[in-house]
Image (cartoon, rainbow, N blue to C red; front, side, top):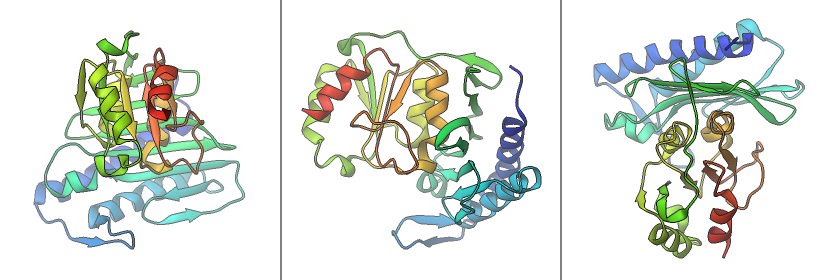
Length: 254
């Protein structure tokens, strides 16, 4: 795969952020505070986001940037970088190794590049539009499962399924297996063909932008839970291997 300057920059930024995040992780000292929405943020989140932004700004000073912790900077560019310095902060705080650095690039509202770096799991996934999806340099594809009774299903936080809990339970009864691997990890599993469906009823663009193109480029399909395409305003997510996306949507919308 011939990497663009966009992807090279994102990979460099993800590695720099990894160094900061792992220094704090290994030290055991994680200063934490609560944001206005009562979700936690650590010093590692803030420092990692700063180095990612600095790296991007050094190459593309005219681009806009949207970071989970720092908000939006710039509105005029056709390019928008979307950053989640630690997806899975609650896991990170408790030394649960399921967390990742998420960096994506949108052009005119469409995601065209994504990097997802899970350092403890040693999984570095990336993709560019039309170039396929890769894990640690190896091309990956989604599963070939076509029947729901053979499908492996993952889901995000249960409290967000209040209006669709019956649908989720009904779906889980039809599936071969159902597991609660939330955050980026469910999408990592989709892109690698290890599971077939990932559903999350509460999300933000920085949570899923990078993974949306990675799943798409691995041969899958990524929408919100009503079948709408990924936009900056997305607030739910459905990722599948693409072969049963319509059927899953019908079950969720019943």
